[in-house]
Image 1 (spheres, helix red, strand yellow):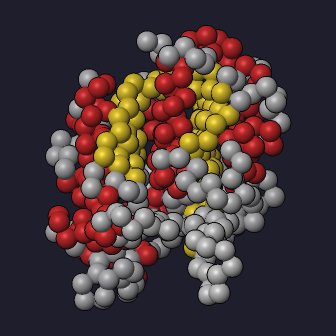
Image 2 (cartoon, rainbow, N blue to C red):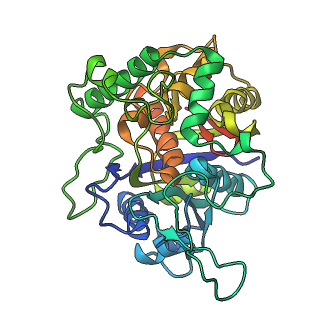
Image 3 (spheres, rainbow, N blue to C red):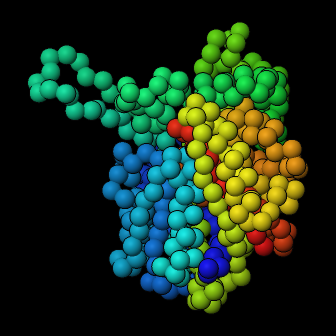
Length: 394
């Protein structure tokens, strides 16, 4: 099969819910990173892009009309460039990368853009149509920001618990304490702040013009275990809960995009690739234990690549919650913890659902390029019980 290369990867700084990026439409965020990719590869004729794949987990608001296609048009790419939007919830951005790589590997494309976008701040409320005409009673609005809504009553109640309660269940199963979760969260913020200070994100972050946001907005400078310990549990009573706003990823806004190609595409773009796509995998798990989805997905992807956890030099694991991240890490005894999220993770950087998978993939690619060689892995848990992983090499 054709080799697939990642030539470039960019993202916006991630904004807090209701923060610096909340006034920017999701289609504009997506267009911004698509345009940035094109500008950073001036030898590439944009008309040569065979397809654009973008992940988005909502789809109910301003991104409702195929946000990938809207991004292409708003970015000024030729109208002949097609685009499609994919939804695998939290992993939508990584699913877009996998689908783009698959198209190139199969010979259906030579050059493709893949990415993801989410504005959780601008996620709308939705009003379902009533079951009968002219209802006399009140109708319920649903927030589409995050999690279950309009749940099918045929699904078992155990499957449809909140995402936070799912993280609590993982903490129960693995005996993960509040103190362990808070320590993990603090380390994420410290690594992220240090990475920004050291300029490690300069190669990939492209600020949105006109918005005063130069780095990820949710990073807490000077946080302590004591300050985290003062936060109340968000999903259970104080005497039993362990998951808080401090040891979970924040609601966020942002976009990310990557440029992928085959050998012929490399010549047309005229740039050295950051990394090569090696293998990927998706798996399923009981929905309430969605946070453990990466456990088998990572194993399966590495096996397909002919690699093991001990071979990894870079591993970006999405930190939806500290509890689920720690639960996954406990299942991989051969993994060196030092290679996991070395520049901070989603607890500090933010988790705009549709964009996170593309951010993780781009982070791995840039880390491999910085070291010059190695094997990297990007993996996410997925609501409703799935996991996904992608192996990159250089």
